Image (cartoon, rainbow, N blue to C red):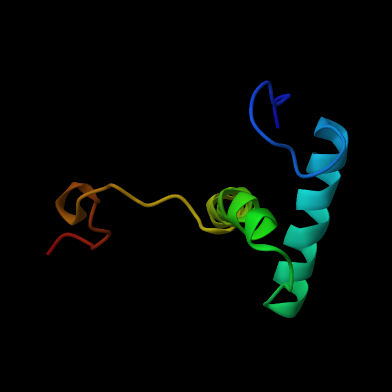
Length: 78
């Protein structure tokens, strides 16, 4: 997460904010819910969505974009 230059911060600094978001995301994934303030929840949502998309990309296999007609048929000649 890049260093925030403008706007309010959740913690005392960028490192604290990153640690806070990491902890909240961990609790969300373990328990399915988190009890926190609205501001922290709003900052957590895009952070957690990025983690979910990253995990889905790592888990799911790449799609096969081969048409069925290009595959050779392994049959003996008649």
